[in-house]
Amino acid sequence: MNCIQTAMAMALVGALAGGCVGATGSPAGATGARPGGSVLSGPVPVALPRAEGTSTPPPDLQAIVDAARADAAARSGTAASSLVVVSAEAVVWSDGSLGCPAPGAAYTMALVPGFRVRIRAGETILDYHAGGRGMILCPPALAVNPTPVQSR
Image (cartoon, rainbow, N blue to C red; front, side, top):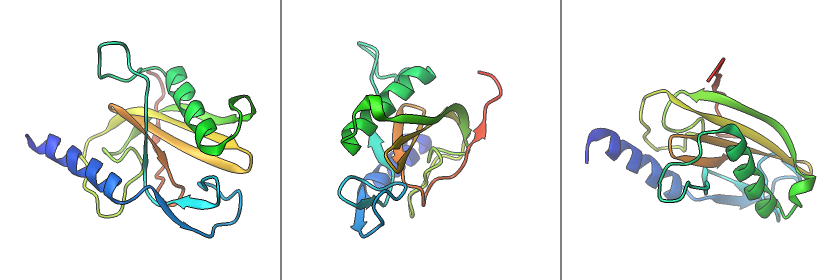
C-alpha cells in the first residue's frame, strides 16, 4: 500500500470510527438533524450508483443530485417529490476530506474535483459532498466551503 492509499484508508476508517450519529437534543428541524432529533456528528458515507461492471461513480452532476435526493428521502422520511434542491454545483475540494474533515482524521492533501448538493427536507438542510469515488452527508459543524469550478 503506498502513502496515498494509506492516507485514504485512514481517512475512511477515521470517518467511520468517528460515528455517524451523535447525541440528541438539537431543536427539531435544525440543519443537519436526522429524523427523531439526533444530530450527525461526523461524515456519513452515502452510496452512489455505479455503472455496471465498474467501481467508478457517475461523473455528472445530475447523477449525484439523484443519489443525494434518494438518500435524503430515505433518511428524512420525506417523499422525494417534496424535497427541494437548494443548490447543486461542481466544486473543487481542498483535500481528501471532501470539505467535511472529521476530527482527528488524516486526509490526502490534494485538490479533489467533485460536487456539492444541498437539499431541503422540511426545515432541515442536508449537505452532500461528492468527489473521487464517493459521496458523504456532511454535518453543518464540519462543512468547509469549496471553491466553485468555473467550467468543467
